[in-house]
Each structure stands twice: as structure tokens, then as C-alpha cells.
Length: 203
Image 1: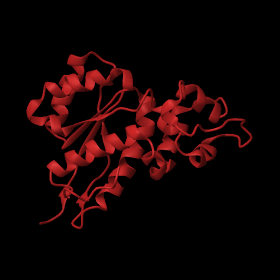
Image 2: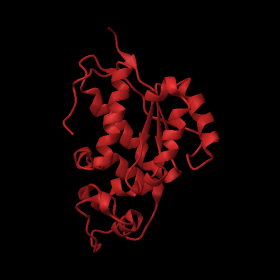
Image 3: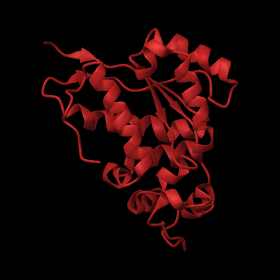
Image 4: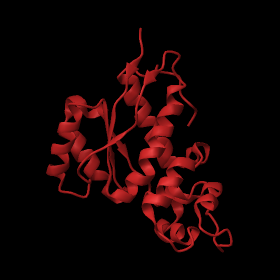
């Protein structure tokens, strides 16, 4: 069997989430591709035109359009909006397995805190008096902690994009919500025959 082409689309809550998640997703797909001896071609995730904070019906219309052109559609929400992802998936019973929820606990910024080395590299000053929490999912206000880690500056396009390119995947693997997302993504890729069932990293 020849190589196939994997296409992914991403809908996020906002632009700042895209800056971090788009490069991170591309890196994670590259790692998952190592699980199959045949491999597949992939040119990068495509971000949709609508943010998921829009009304559910509008998001559903966007998902419907994307499902016509992409193998997998990922929908990002913070944890308190998880129900919106499930509601959208229920509208597409036949294609629900192709809609993958990407839901950090609390906020995406918690994932940006997972790798102290990447944070130090992204920070404009190495003298910041901040400490990265051991369990990022238990941080009450990830945005505030991340703001302190970045020296009080929030240049989302620059700093979040750099973190998406450099945060260690092994560090993120320790975050339960991240592992759940990878498990769901891997399941979708198995059902679409991009990955073989059983070649899974232990959760």
C-alpha cells in the first residue's frame, strides 16, 4: 500500500490558542507518524475561519464544511466549555469519530507551563522570580502564572508560537488532559487507517 495524505483542520477559541496549538499539533503528528512503517504525508494543520466561542450552530456549520475536505477536525475549548464539543459531535453521528476534542483543564495556558526549559527560552528575562508548578492542571489561574513567567509581556503571536514550537512533548505527556487528546487523536487516525491499532504509547 502506498503512502496516503493526512489532512487536519483546527478550530480554536481564539487566535492566541492557534499560535500555540498549530505548531504543537504538527510536531505531535510527526511523532505519531513514527508508529507506522509505511508512513503518510502531512503538510500541516489548517485553522478554520470561525472561533469556537461563536454560537454552536455557527460552529456546527463550519465543522460540516471542514468535514467535506479534511480527514479530522479538531475542536478546541477550555474545560468549562467541554459540553459544546460533545453537542457538536452529536450532530454528526456518522462522522463523530473524525471530530476530536482538544480540551485542556481550565485553559490552554496550562499546557504552556509544562516545560520550564521552553519557558525560560521564551522569556524576555532570565531573572524572573517565577516557578513552574509541578502539576500544571492544578494551577488556578494559568494565564497569570504564564504572564509572570514571560516577564509580564503577552505577545501571543511571538511567545505562544515559540512555545508551541519548543515545549517538550515528553513534558506534555505528563499532563493527563494532553494524554487524553492524544489517545482520541490516535483512535481517529487508527479508524482512518493512518495508524495501526495496538502501537500505542502507555498512558
